[in-house]
Length: 122
Image (cartoon, rainbow, N blue to C red; front, side):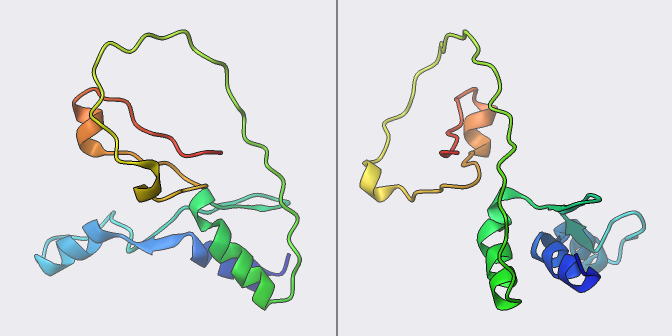
């Protein structure tokens, strides 16, 4: 793959580090804090991107006239025999909740209080 295409795909998975800019604004040292955080992984035969970047990566490839080959190699894992001992809060109706086919929906408060997080469909 040409390095220019790899660079564009890596840029899709990159975002600015708020900790860097917070420290910079307070005139604190920024040593060891990257300005940009990248979620991309470079491999010899492919570029690994987070699932949330799929739509934008496909758009970049479409603009460049490249037809991607997608291969899902996620491991499904093994089911666990667990029992939930807490209580759930009432859920809003399904039509009011946004569908998120890629990624994970998690709440920091739910994790802290021991409630389960909701995982989006594969």
